[in-house]
Image 1 (tube, helix red, strand yellow):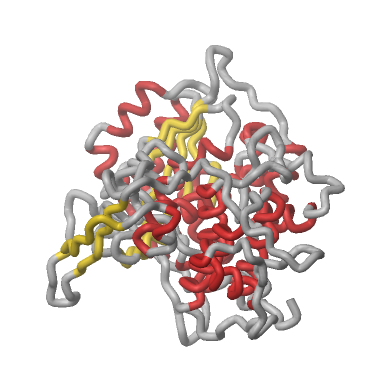
Image 2: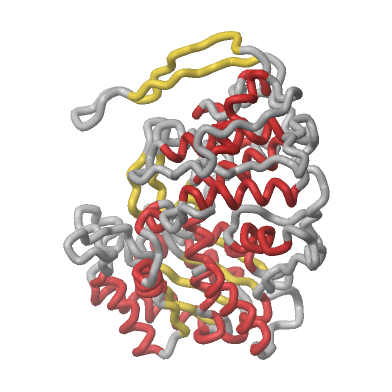
Length: 475
């Protein structure tokens, strides 16, 4: 599915025509909407993310995103609070107003939000569309995002929030407004070959401690994690060529890796990169022969095993701060015990902390907090034996949730090398048994050698393949 979206984006970029915008400054996309689109604090509220928050990452710097979406607002309340007027004070000819409501508008128990279907349609026409057009700007209607729902009888994701989505479609047809039917597009994409678990992973369904904002966990079928927000934003942008073709010129082209052609790991690097398991180092480079750090490999292994990163909690994440790119991954790894003591110093104190009180529906939530000496030293190049330990810890953590356990291909085999540290030997043997690692031509493992990015990709791909439903027994 990701490849299909990327293909649409590239094709759209090549076929676009240039719009006629005001000469003074860059064009701006204003977003008027609710909580599925709004910006969230990337540290305090991680992993909750709105699609408008990530939109700018997919577009060039030649266009500006002004995300005015805010939670708990309907089209009526957003207007009555003066938020729409504020946009009208700023919007210029050639700018765009993306309009997405319908989720909160239907809440009859809240008179501040509720608006009838007829009044909803009238408000969209009179205020959001006509007033935008009067200012020489271009309105773009979007249906509300699909709610997560699963029909076990039909084995499919049903259409949701149908009434106001249909009303939005009617307004677009009646006014000739540019229109992106994200509600239908999301649901159709879910049912077009996406794995059920993959769809569920897009939404804000969190285990205890995964979010520092919701310590006791969430079962939120409305809002998105970061990957869900990106998914929605990519779908919206994939519709530009059909619905808003003049915006296609601002879509970033998919980056190509220019330094892997002819490399011995080219095929594996491309596979991992296209599946989102690894990233480049910038400027279209992957740097396959550069050394991979502890932090980089931890992130790769967690992504390959489908283990979520956790919200950063100050003072619990070793030497890493909220400004460090790996803080969420390290926090998640520490919470799950994925990092051995030997890589982070000795445990100094254990504290049982109550995260949430008991309710009528749920028991109280507790968690163990560990304090450590030293630190993870995430910038340090990882050794092959350290790689084996992190890989197996992530692999074994993921295996616990599988119905069909992966098969070993070297059952009973061991990797012999006198230089392997005693605390790594079991992990190295297990990684070898599952086929995640191999020895050199001379039969040695060379445990203290540093791992390259290309070598790391080989291990990451094997983890992902072993844990996937499509794994084969002849790997």
